[in-house]
Image (tube, rainbow, N blue to C red; front, side, top):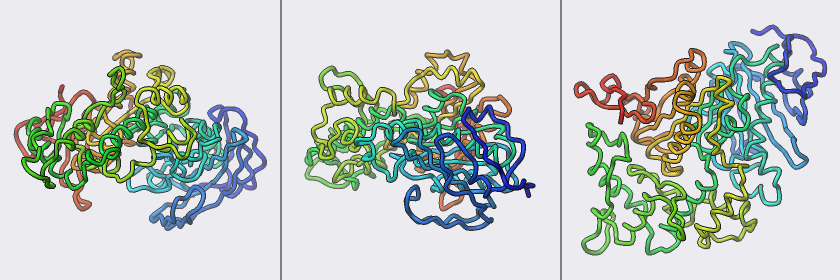
Length: 513
């Protein structure tokens, strides 16, 4: 058990937290007296080991019961960097057994809640169990909708980048006060919007984190929401083009029949979907309609989903399409009857400022240009110059599932390539890695090896200064490991050695594509 000091006096922290040195640890409850710039601490309480119950409301989207937690100090605070800001954050710190490190966790979608616990390991609960002091934020609004931005430009800035940075600075100050010293190392762990948040941190606030784990980043936000509505236009705008979910299995099977064996192993997973030359016309109905075939209009729809988003006037590519193998996840964007609300919200509340805007009216020329101009880098995190982050020793580990049905994986490849082009291969070779995950859906799941420890790989990289040459991963069936594979740094792929079980990672080697 940590030895606690007595009552803590008022501590003013208005300069960057990394410049602070707090030598005397304090009791958890005494943190309620901590004074931080633009910050109000609402709760500072010791939580015993075991179960924590959280009731819905504010940054808690629904009632939660978190089990098997170690004893910790829980701090809730509100940040107000602008008069219209209302950013909720939580900081959880192990009472004993702290590993000396800080791990912040990101959000998905429009955020609006704190990631207390999720089905995948990017949550306060998971980080705490692993000995990290951890923090999360709702990014300044409640609810997973973009409606908060209408008439609130400061809240949009909070969502875009200011809330995460403010949370990071405040969390480090709270950690330093509680333990008597700040974290030795700081990590970011996020996927989807959380991946975007991680890239934004590297670009705007390079001193915040020593290592950033950014999965399936929606970093080109304005083009990502455009891509989602491109798919909605293809399948939902005209019902004669509707491609129903009951046809996805036949389409997916046809893809595997055409391309699965190209990587040397028939396992239901495409190691590199870009090598798959699949034409959905092989499924064209010969007579009538059935779940096992596609009509001519449905074939056109599939082509549009696989193909890039293009400007109808210039023909220029605006965003990549989804990859072969992703078909089983198309329902959210293409299954209807209405389009996914997240991309619609961006155009309703940010671009056109009209809650009655109809997605069918989207112009993929002028409206997309307008969306880019309005954003101006508030949400988009596409700057390839992460030189300051790299120069101070920061490590960026990106990953993306090839079967992602929400954010086209080639977007992440494009960003990685832009960083290589900007900084040079030699400079980033020890600082930036991208891992493409065969058969993996959005942030996890799917038929591929989606279970891997990205934080452990990042931590070893930061501590030992050796870039990961591969990351062990597994596919779970009913909670049990059924297959293991190495994840390889892009552009390498995992190749079967030719002998031994194809379900064992030891029988694969990372090699040039």
